[in-house]
Image: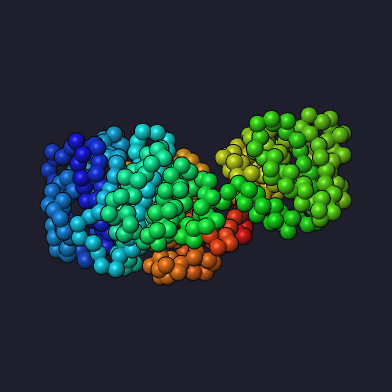
Length: 453
């Protein structure tokens, strides 16, 4: 049986249908008197509850047109156990238009797999939770945001979703996750003049012709081109050394071959060696007069371990040799094991995002997520809830301020993303692609900096 719940934030209403019932608390409740500008989202957070628990305890909230008002009394049920929250938390199946639209509100649509059937769905639920947290933050600044969302499964035909009347009323839509849905959704967004945000890296040939598309994550080729450009600018006076890791399954060949071609065009000499080379042959690839920058042709952990062991042996044998490591985004997964080596070898890691667990903004958002949803974010890179928060904060403010003319160009939105830099450039006469990237730099003095381009 499908049950519906309305999520009411002041200026933000979401109607979602769920396939999982939440048991009514049988324990003695208390009453909360609503203060000016309070929201259900904030009240639930204050008492360590889910919004669903509040709605279950206050059935009148399901009435069409219900609004939370100052001096209302809200029943606060006693807190359930954490285990019960995780087990009984409803999983969104679809969210349709609520009954009383807000005048002047930004209308946000979400078309992603919002389900608990597999990893895609669970990751997108966390992403979507981050979007809702951003909406609540913007509400506190006076924004009105109407959220519509649909769970789009792993099928090509999303026409049933696009036939929903609410879909064509959106100012912007986040989605899809799957390339097979891109053509239909792109045509729909173009026909109804809706901004379409592609939140993750999928094949988007429509980017070349649809001016309404924003692609947040660059294609691998575009990302490699950007990294190569910044590499040659930063390491002009270095001696590059390429290490063959004998990894037949590596996906880094396009980057290393592209970088080598660029160095050759610029007339820059570089060394080549192999992880299986003898110590003397390995050492001959390095310069003792210039600082060396080392590039592996694999991003995997075992190969990195062997490379660092070889470099440790080399620097012990040749004191004063200057070595910088230039790595890959995957290396951030190895930070716990390799942090000291990253510092030792002045390591640079190019990335489209940076999860900094020590940042006060990261810690605050993680704490709020835990309070709102009674569980931690998934252990993943990037953190999907933070990604959703960044995207919603950036695009909702941009659409509110600039409407259809919003392009995501530098300086248009006064928001600094917590995890994912956003700086869009138009691709010919087509859509807009995020061209921002960063180097995560681990300095020998045991500190880290992020360099954003």
